Length: 203
Image 1: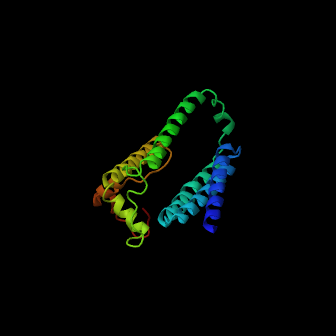
Image 2: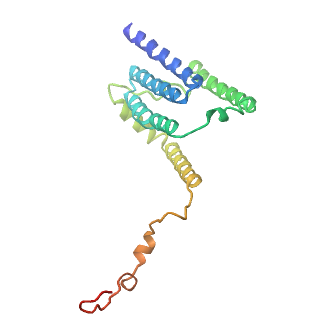
């Protein structure tokens, strides 16, 4: 009974926080509600015994991503009113994409509910908790059955990171930069100049 009450409490706060994320007018408040949603989602993971996912959600998303969003929103002077000007113009496209995502989620939920023996069912890869831990089971699953998909996901993230750096990198001529190749290629003749200085005189 207590576990059910805690579950409904975490679930209600998570749903309410998610609604406030997309409805809050202040972007700083939206990020704070996002952090609250992450914490309650981590509590839901703990209730089902997925302590590793709960830890990753708190450490990665709350400790890095959400805090980064918060600092970016607070430090950058972004005109959010100007960003919302084209909302009605892109509303049909957004609606179509939302319907497609909703249909995909319905198909996934239907396969879990009505086909328990299907490969997509929840209970297919659930290990015995008395034999292996949750973290051990997740590691075995990722690095055996889904190893290639895991590596492809890492490559996609690497390409996205490199593309972001190239898009935001701007060369400035008024800044002195270090050239490792020129420093390594320097010789003694280029670096050292010997001069004979007379006694009592200067260079």
